[in-house]
Length: 339
Ligand code: KG4
Ligand code: ZN
Image (cartoon, helix red, strand yellow):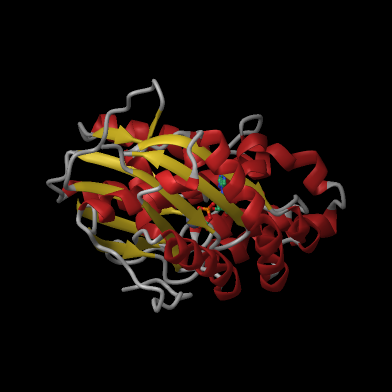
């Protein structure tokens, strides 16, 4: 019998609902909140209000697109954290009420595990090869930067993490310094494709072990741009693509140096990318090179499954469903990463 999971994601500024059958996506609806653009970042209170407006139409659309009715759903999986508490409360309350009224299992999902497990999603009529355990996974998003050894679906060992900003924040803050819109990652990615990555060089942090740090890079970029603007007010306009390409190169080098270091002592055969920043075309190319150099296979989610979406929540829920790892209406959302 088919297992249909309804996934609900509301951890930050995307309200999303998806229906999957096994690991195959039947629908994946994402309402991105435009309200934050004018503030240059996510405003938590505005995010929760927008989730409240979006949640019912988004779930309704996900069910319609999947062509199933609510009585066919096997279980409801929802993001319980980490994220903005007000935002999480909207999705989690809805998931709890709906599962309770339908008398079906409720499954709580960790957002970061879901980013990793997005690599196990399949699209209809597009069979996809899946990574084998254990694999090394670089998980890079707006809020997190983690280097993981993934031993099993729910056994993820942290090898390294950022001690300050996340890789996505490094992209977003660099974009802000260049007066580019939020979120800056995709904008920098696009500009970088036209620019010279060797025009300017920015030094990256060399932390011992496998941890990351991006705050020094951001500050040196800020001072560099500010100093040049004093001499030439047109400095950004005249060098925009080269600035984007050069800062992107530094962020990618910082990420990939540690991946290479980890691979040297690793028994993992597969290398995996996850999280919003894994949409970055430069990072994908750099990881492909590393995979070839170290004789590993690289797995990346399709671009639309890299940033926040409910299909990844649903697939994480599916693997928990198989283990009968169910939750209760008393599970409280959490804002910080579980260690
Ligand atoms: O995973 P995600 O949607 O949300 C979090 O869980 O944080 O990641 C969002 C982050 C933002 O910082 C955004 O700028 C970045 O992913 N991002 C990118 C690209 N697309 C999204 N960064 C670099 N290049 C991209 N193409
Ligand atoms: Zn995310």
